[in-house]
Amino acid sequence: MIKFENVSKVYPNGTKGLTNINLTIEQGEFVAIIGTSGAGKSTLIRCVNGLNNITQGNLLVNDTDVAKLKGKELRQFRRHVGMIFQSYNLVPRATVLKNVMFARVPDMNLFKVIFGLFSKEDKLAALDSLNKVGILDKAFIRADQLSGGQQQRVSLARALTQDTDILLADEPVSALDPVTAKEVMDDFKRINEDLNKTILLNIHHVELALEYASRIVAIKKGEIVYDGPSQNVTKEILDEVYRKEA
Ligand SMILES: Nc1ncnc2c1ncn2[C@@H]1O[C@H](COP(=O)(O)OP(=O)(O)OP(=O)(O)O)[C@@H](O)[C@H]1O
Image (cartoon, rainbow, N blue to C red; front, side, top):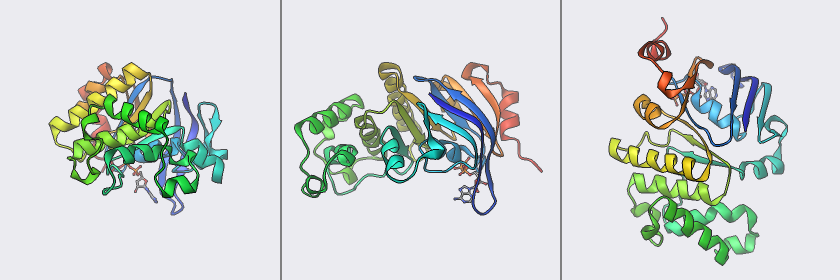
């Protein structure tokens, strides 16, 4: 479960990122965060895994008080929350399989990391994740030889290999063409339904958000202005969310 209680985030330069956010997301929900550019979508997602610190309120992730974590504890916590970025964050010259196995690196000693000595178990877990996102046949190809959609699937497989309950995704499909974007969203949906993983992603494409997520959280100027089922999102709500203030 992810629980924001009166959470605010002010950046060191004084910019308000989030103001008084109250939001509870149960295990297994598929939630899309929508809003204009600069509304605070990334800020919210990044607070969940401690990439952004909150400046007020409480944030609980599976009963962990994220604001209290520091150093090693914070790094350990992040291993339990998968994160997928718009830019894939892959090692371009390494094979797809190695990229996925890198998810296991925090559990390995430095010697094994340097020599790439992954266990049979790590390899099987990585291959299983690649199979789940439909690119098992690409396992031994270098990551930089894949299309954008395939690379995003590799980063999804890497997050799956971490075996976390929660998957966060910061604009996972914005660099992809419309057809490929839908394919990647299909992967998220399948992972959500088959494996009961919580999916929390932010997305500029409202139609995709409404089609795939079961719940929409709309943010405007750092505040939640809509939180409810996708099917209840009306044109009036969207007009309000995307209306430019004078
Ligand atoms: N590191 C930072 N330092 C200061 N202000 C920041 C920082 N990161 C974001 N902001 C500000 O916080 C606000 C929310 O930014 P955020 O990136 O969360 O918006 P967003 O909704 O994800 O936007 P986009 O859709 O363009 O990615 C904006 O006003 C932004 O300028």
